[in-house]
Amino acid sequence: MGLALGTMRLPALLLLVRDMPVAVAGGTNILVSTLSALTGSYRHWRDRRVDPTVVVVMGIPSVVGAFVGGLFAEAVPEKLLLGLAGALVLWQGLEFVMRTRRLARATVPGAAPQPTRLPIGLHRGAVEAGIGFGIGLLGSAVGLILGSIRLPALVRILKMDIRTAAGTNLVIGFLMGAFGFLGHGVRKDFDLPLLLVMGATGMVGTYYGARLTGKVSLRSLVLVTGVVLISVGALMVVDVLARSVR
Image (cartoon, rainbow, N blue to C red; front, side, top):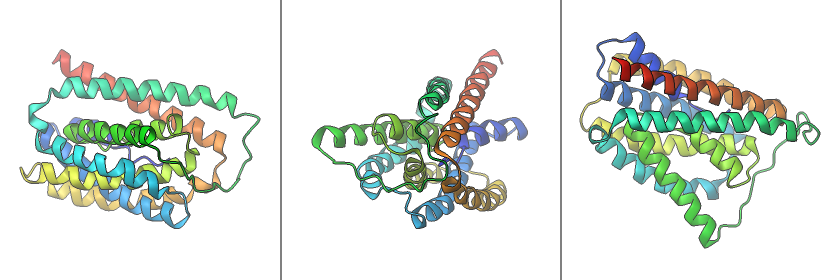
């Protein structure tokens, strides 16, 4: 689906490893997501489901935002950021599920997606750059590459085919995660053993998952993506509420 799903991994780390500091969980999670995005990106690029123009225009601001967010992560109210991100992901998931009704008659199962070529004017370029920087800043601050927010933006705002958006999203996520980890890495906010284990298995899973993207009907992909986003958003919101009660 073009998602590294660090939004599911991060709460799992915090639940399973009770004594792990939040900053360490975030740093570990963002590099695991980055490694997963790397292998998935390669597969999507090989199958021509990546828009290089969008990667450049949105990816560069994402990298800048990610580095700044990772560097100053401890200065940001974590609950507020996670809560806002969770609510946004949940809302986008609901929109994706509703979108499947409009695609019911238009979808051709198994149709090969064509790379999207978007005209980059001043307004569209500014919108893409702004989205990239904002998601990079927010995501890196909490240890997420936030592909679950970027993917709906690519589909709804930039009008990209969801399969091309999935590949493009993973490439941008890899770039953002790599530089976001640099911000965490200078403070050594990561757990090496967990990083090695989860990074290796995540790379394998993402590579083989990317092979399925072009084999699934557009309507089914939109529906499954929506369900996953709803689950991720709900999990993030519940996690924030649980922390507030403690």
